[in-house]
Image (cartoon, rainbow, N blue to C red; front, side, top):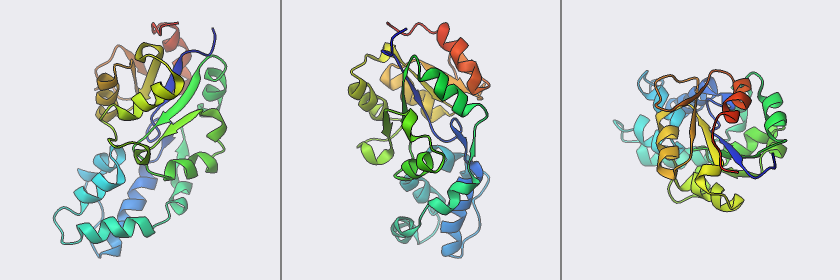
Length: 210
């Protein structure tokens, strides 16, 4: 196989278990304004959406929305990266897939995605990284995936997107890109992976156009 086709990864919940890191970050924002920690219903939301949307949600019942949106720019995310955990088999699968596919990341993170990839020495694996700062319309809008397709000069059928949330599923559907659900049986797709190391066998059966 030539390296014509591409595999695009979500970050949080796919490349990393980042739930603890994200909770610590948003709880820090809340504590700065003497507010209680994240509610159980807000935890899944902040795990999937952009920082701006997450801040607007978790501060929605307070008078601090604008101040919190401003304060988030003052907070360095790097101290929270130590709470992130690489998914088992990540390095192995990136090395393996990189032999046959071009690799990219589409995430609703902001500039922190670059700090994360640098901290774990992963940047070299990805030819294109698209964050919410790189598009006018972040996920679930298809623009992040379409931007990657444009960079690779590929049609949607020549790519696959690996994600773990409804936001990821909606993004892939809107872009016309085959979607591989990662460790989330509730997502509607023919292709599912419980481990990153399952991806090669799934991709062999996924009809990516040559």
